[in-house]
Length: 154
Image (cartoon, rainbow, N blue to C red; front, side):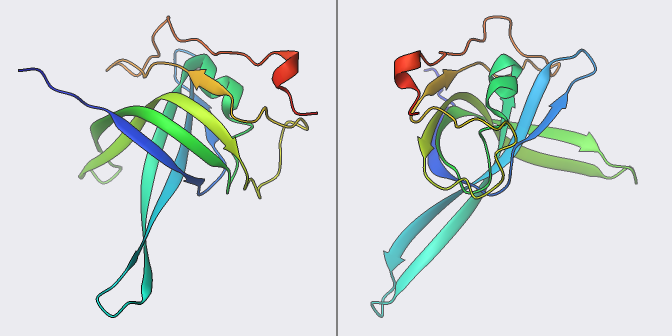
């Protein structure tokens, strides 16, 4: 029997995406995403449970979207879980689990952070891409479904 590693999240960005490049020049964007579940406890009081997710986006998709991925923005993310281990500066083993994003949909709303590009992002546009390989590089088949003039809301 096979296995499945798929994550689907809809939430709000907790901070602006941070853009970096690998030593080989591959773009990579990192950001945090909050998902909140609302429920009533046994006393009937409304409660919230917020989970924070680390998201990693690779390649051209990261380069294209990082200016639109601002704090408070609502997005849809599809990807897979990936756990990395490394030794920190003190030589201690560190471990983190991240969502390696393969598809991002900008849902609009939020976005209290400054728009660093000076342009408004297209609403509800889908951007697809693959995750990086084990060596930290993005696959060459990554693509972005670019918006047409009719999709831009201004």
